[in-house]
Amino acid sequence: MTKYDPKPETKRVEQDKRISPKRHRRVTAQDVAEAAGVSRSAVSRAFTEGAYLDEAKRERVRDAALKLGYRPNALAAGLQGGRSHLVAIFVGDMRNAYDTEVVTRLVGALNAIQKWPILIDGGGLLSVKEAMGEVLRYPLDALILRSGSMDPAIARECAKLHIPVISSGRILTHPQIDNVCCRNADGSHVAAQLLLDRGRARFGYIAGPAGYSSSSARQDGMMRALATVGLAPVAIEVGDFTVESGFAAAEHLFAHARLDALLCANDAMAIGALGAARARGIDVPNDLSIVGFDDISMARWPGINLTTVCNPIDIYADKVVDLLTARLADPEKPSDVAYIDTHLVLRGTH
Image 1: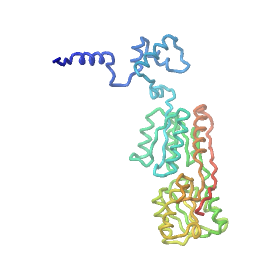
Image 2: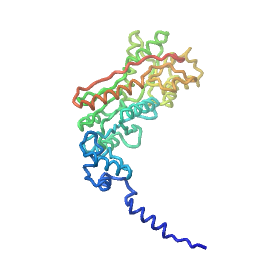
Image 3: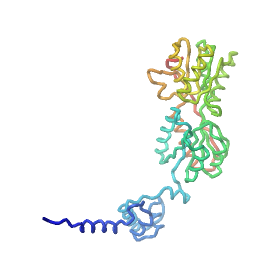
Image 4: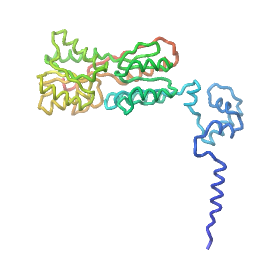
């Protein structure tokens, strides 16, 4: 019987250790420099577009990098004054279906231009100030604000750090802040006019949280339309942009007011209100018209079929990318505001 000898296996392991003594950590540019027999700066030049390096050295560096599994550290390049290609997105509240759909589309649009997002959840455990303090430690190419409730001072602080800022939901005036803004008031004005033309007169409104500029603008648009015919809302409730809050707000409205029209600051709350109306046996749209705002995917579901104001996501993402590209190309250019037009989507609840 042959006795097992562990020595060959032990020898192989020891040999592997000698070949790759630092396998437990990320391969560095210094490792590549030593393997290729060049300086550390030569490794950097080998991976920098347009940098001069003797072609033979470049080949040795790239061959050593391939064998060792080395990739240039983009974060380190950003710290040295180059582009990190990192873009922070303050996403607002991800419980809001519209925010979720917007961020999904925006991430894809940024990836298409070789930008890599860092997402900051406005509804997370960290406060906005704490979260922003942490993310500003990274060499960001830009910051995109998706929340109309954020303190404008935070955006201005980023601009002072020479980090380009794109704000959506609230227009911020600063030399290095660009803005994307939906025509919220116009959209809700048209929605209210639609219901006025249908003969509705007893309007209710479900607003978003106080401090959200989009919600207040949408309410103003409705109020302006009603004022032209001498009307005002019968009752107003406040939700938090979620389906659950829309259901609760509508329940309170139906218990205390007789309505024939209900406008909501977003689709999620309108969907909640639609559920509350059906639970009470209210005939939508014959006895009550309900109109939302945003045109999220759920609004198109057959069981919902919500009439709404479209706040087009694809156009928003394209405008953000256009503003970002222009700002990075010319950091000193004047601030810009890109407005997004809305349009009514007529379905079955008006």
